[in-house]
Amino acid sequence: MKERLIFEQSKEGRRAVSLPKNGILPEDMDTLIPGQYRRKEPAALPEVSELDIVRHFTRLSQLNYSVDTEMYPLGSCTMKYNPKVNEAIAASGKWAQLHPLQPEETVPGMLRLMHEMQRILCVLCGMDNICLHPAAGAHGELLGLLLIRAYYKSKGQKRTRVIVPDSSHGTNPSSAHLAGFEVITVPSDKNGEIDLKALENRLDDSIAAMMITNPNTLGIFETRITKISDMLHQRDILLYGDGANMNALLGRFRPGDLGFDVIHLNLHKTFSTPHGGGGPGSGPVLVKKALEPFLPVPVIDIKDTRYCLSYDRPQSIGKIHSFYGNMGVIIKAYCYLKALGREGLRKASSLAVLNANYLKEKLKKYYFLPYDRVCMHEFVLSCRDNRAMDIAKRLLDYGFHAPTTYFPLIVPEALMIEPTETESKDMLDSFAEVMKKIKDEDPAIKRTAPHNLPVSRMDEVNAARNPDLKWR
Ligand SMILES: *Cc1c(COP(=O)(O)O)cnc(C)c1O
Image 1 (cartoon, protein in one colour):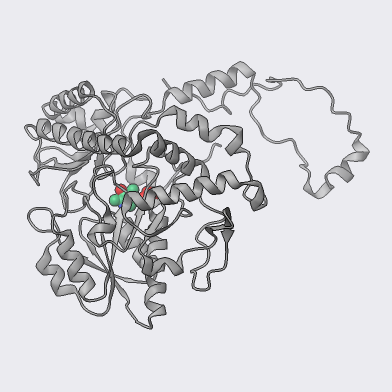
Image 2: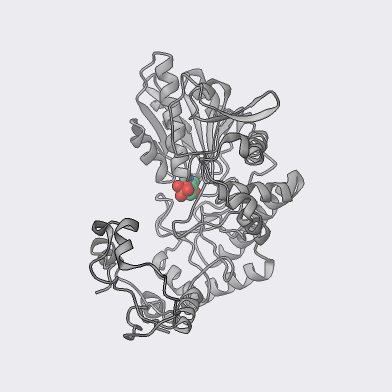
């Protein structure tokens, strides 16, 4: 199905609604809206009926891939089902109609929710304090690194470098760079974990922090994490945890207990709020006591049993976001946490790990599994006889969203698969069946896939270099 643009469906004079005359006299217009702000020509809007509009947008909505329609095994993105009750609560007038400029005393409920959310996340992660402001994981990383910079500055130490493993998410080196640090890479060993010897060689007094993702982006748990944490702390180097993917650990493992000094979470992954397509996110940053004084303002305090916002933080790095963060996302994640409770979270994490291992064991018969060991919430295949891109595109023809491709960078032709806990065994079996079928298909069919979608294989390089975004 090819859907024409709404502009292409326009017919002169066609209208969706007819409004009564507004009763404003032409001579009054100047006082209402001064001439310089008014259009000289009518806006170039499509002229369509209400039915045209309804059908156009309904058809467009049916072209979408979404968690609500298909399995979405997009590794590192944790595309789990988002319970609708959370949406309903966040959208209810009680929350949605609050305004961030309202006086504090009119929003005690919101302040209490934020305060409780902070406490729950601190307990869950074994950390001392938290900032809910960042709007994404990468934004949280930037904040975490700015806190680390402020910490060393306050101690009068000049530390200019940050270590990241070669398996890290691309945002890690980018955030470190943006925060003014020089980035140093440490390789992975043959088991997919951080190479300790190489790490030892890189440690000196110029290092401010090391950023670690655990489980790492291969879906493997860094088993020597406490040893690494000790190696760093002996030299007064801080340990940053990329906690974007906490789905394997919920209710089981507290990063704070293993020596992490700063971590960020992605509420829009692990805590089941919708994301993708550039939608809103939330990347809270949790810290140990030593970094607390530098947290952004305002922080939520309790004064005479009332919640309030405090700006009195002389060592604060200032603001990282307007107001208090993406509250809609935070409310949904809060509902998710409350609904599941500790036992529910433990069950979610065990099913996430079970689903990933089940699928891994099925698929390793057909695809090369470079790190063949028990995985956590996801695993990474290497398409030796096929191009990862071709497999990914062909999956679309069978109604599955593609896995993450070409990441992590240390695996050639990588397919990174994360089924999440919300898929059933039947669905995992269907996915494995389709993957098996695709493997043996005619390469020519794969190379030109997808064939059953409105848009077939794109010239991705051309699309990125010369984007054509405008209707003419
Ligand atoms: C998604 C992700 C990030 C970045 O989070 P955004 O919200 O996309 O900025 C960082 N690290 C890892 C491991 C991730 O999976």
